[in-house]
Image 1 (cartoon, rainbow, N blue to C red):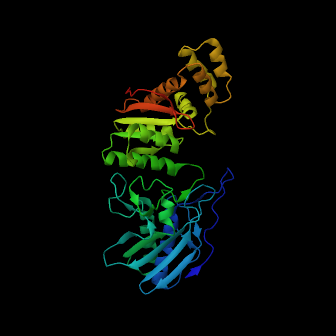
Image 2 (image 1 turned 90 degrees about the horizontal axis):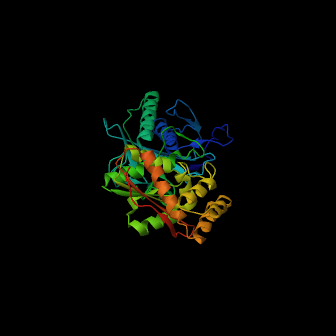
Image 3 (image 1 turned 90 degrees about the vertical axis):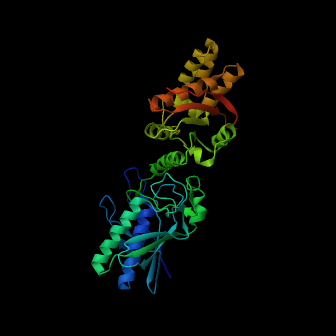
Length: 373
């Protein structure tokens, strides 16, 4: 097996951040190289593929091996400047001739998961190779077959070095994808910090929860809030949505694909942003509105002096602590505001919502009762 440096540098974006390639694009490049070698005896390196948007990037091979009736090629994933857990992973594809008329079939090798729960765009028992990468690989197989006189009937096995370990840092176990990573991508390109993969995982989590009959899910902003949700509601893993900062992604998808009950659990500061109508709770994209907290405190009966103290606090947590010292249930008021803001986004969707605010230690500092608009 020949080992080489993999991955051509991705394009530089206007932000100065490099874009990268999806696992689906890497698998397609490896498939193209392996099938070409199977037919001709030679691996093209670099190998050029066509992405869904018409772009034609070139990929250097990081591994190649040719045997009797099979060929393997590998590409190292370059995610650019995106903090992707699969950045640097070696995606290998082994191509073998299939039976005449069998077409292209896909198989999970080491480090690629298998679907075990309904609700995903793949049947239970299928390898976790998503529809767009499958289409890309079929198209490249057809192009190689036409160029080199092949029949186009091939068996494609995809593996990812250390994929089973890497998958533990993704949503896959919760989505019922066991044994490794998913081969993903809709454009072939990873846009740094677009968070598209995270939002897609939220949607797939809702799909799986619906498919297995869950009627109650919890959107959690982090690991501490998730532990609170488990303790408060005794929910199974497939009912827990790793919402992060993307409250809007959860609410907008549930608006179209409702589940009976949604509980939103998060830190007080993030929940105060939701109460203010922000759907992206990231600190770089929305800020705690201390003026709003002061007005909520006023509406809850705070004195003028207490309202002034809250308005002049330096952080949301500081405002909460001031309110707590005076016996004012600001956490409950914020929880109600966050619930009502969520119901506004859900519009007339048949979803009952309740909310819990926690502090940094995971202590519940506010909650709302369940309500449907």
